[in-house]
Figure: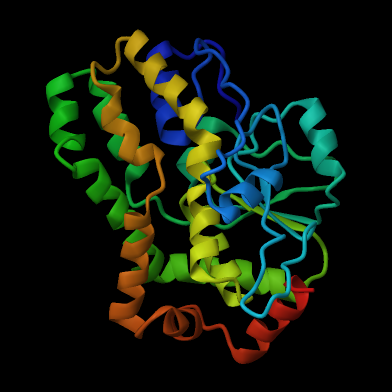
Length: 308
């Protein structure tokens, strides 16, 4: 169900924050600027791999990266994205040219109901593979909907927002359903030569973790995979800044910077998931094989599928 134009500004703004979209009364984001010369090689490549769309800001080809042994991850095979519910007709044409055969949606039902289902080219239907947000949606509804700066500070200030995000990342390792969804997606990639796309709402956390796992599995160094993960901050920076300004101008938050930890990806968040994998499974390899149940055959197929 698409959002009705009669929704209140408050409702739209709350949805915008929870779902990574701008309310109707906020200006569109500026185009993403390329990384500076000081940016890492992986961040620069992530920029070059962008699929420019009008209705989504964090859509990329995950290929092009070098592996430990000097080979390269294939392009045109796997794509990562943020929400696809606001795509334009021109965007649909762009997606059609990618030749996608499967689109996996990591959003929970509440996100889909409020923000709308994926808008996809004819012949494509999303595969729902919900990964829990650990209550983030409800947390945001409560905090922002209150319009109470004291309550917002109590809920999100003093490091609480960042702590909440670390808890979300722990569930990537601790929650059995989440593990099953990540594993199913990696098996889909291993089992088909057809182009595939997966996404969540902002394309940074659930999608970022999936991409990190995929890149590491096929032999991309940690530093490079982490660079791809952090590149979401570049893609989303202008968009998210306009959202914060919209919340302030709309009278919903006196201090919208409280939500910055919820909008960003951070090495601290990624590190929390990796530390949890070490604590429970002895490391990333144990998480992949024991936690996700990926056998040697699947990992070999992933490598063959993704690496030239």
